[in-house]
Image (tube, rainbow, N blue to C red):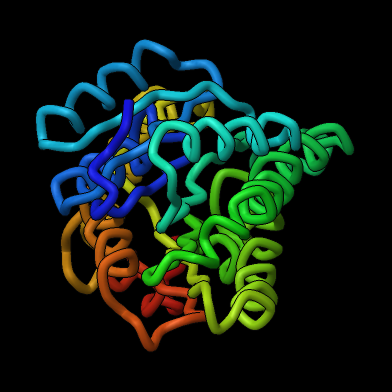
Length: 263
């Protein structure tokens, strides 16, 4: 496949479902050719890639585990071979282990290492692999999908929140290091209505539905944040914001304002 060389190219890691899928489709509809990345969900990635093609994008799906440095290098090489350029990198791939913050024995060193490898080191490895290609783009942008957990310490587990705090710090460091050629920003969602939380045993038995309703009730905007809301911001940081770098953008319907009644 050879794309129209005037069209920008985006890599979206972890884009077989959820925020990544919505972001890939949004970019496809905004004039980007897209590389959909997946680690295990090949069927989901193929479906997202087809949706992107239907939106007018030349799109490929590439398997790669971002926690493996060689996979990151191969992913970037495959995209360059196919499209000849990279303009935007969306670091969306992430993982967690659901664990109550009151049960410290629910997490061990291996859990912390696994989450760090994907959520932090994986982003760093993808940025390092794509850096040279991004530097020659006139619109180079890196968008890290972080979490409000990195500020609040709330979320699926203490280990997860810790990795997102590290990703926020890394975003600031790399925004300095890669300027002026490449802008680096992070989007920090609160709770997003995707199937992600359906895996959590601690949210079964009606507790997930109760949590969602509490989110809507507590949020000043009285609405649930959806994957498309995050994708909208991804597209904006990819297409615009030419004077914006080193920003940690919170998208949560305003729930970060509710410090008196934390979720």
